[in-house]
Length: 204
Image (cartoon, helix red, strand yellow):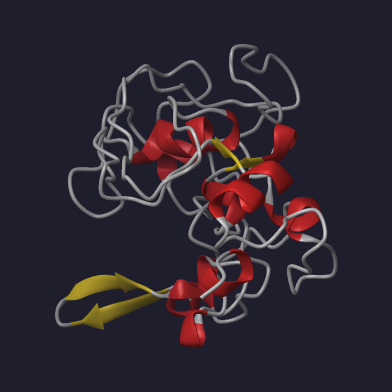
């Protein structure tokens, strides 16, 4: 599922002193990886222990629970409780306080860690069947965008390594837009112009 273009992506921390000038080390390690992160790919970062408030709606047919899988890994930097440089046994450091901080309140964010399968699509009536609907990335929605056990996670929409970026920092960020950093949508698996990514799953 993951691409191989970490260099110059949102998650390229090789220029930070706390990364040891390594691309992979803040998140992954070949030895002594943590074993308590579900589906974690040789995970090297401190995991969040936050309890999250999750999205609810009378229109939601999927069952939401606490974040799991790859989403738990993403939130281990983006929930504002774990420092971005807490890796390789380091347990304190720099917290996101604004930019990049989703907090533990996910009630205003897209539902995550829900099972998205044929049964849900049939029950909902406004979702495409992930087992048969093309994702636009070469396979089906299930093949290309869902985590294990048919779960929709952060990585269902976001490409963590962003192999499409060939412009360095400005490929992902407008550095001086209104005096602040503005993130482009390059981290999405596909262009969301005219809601193309949304309409991959949603029938509208």
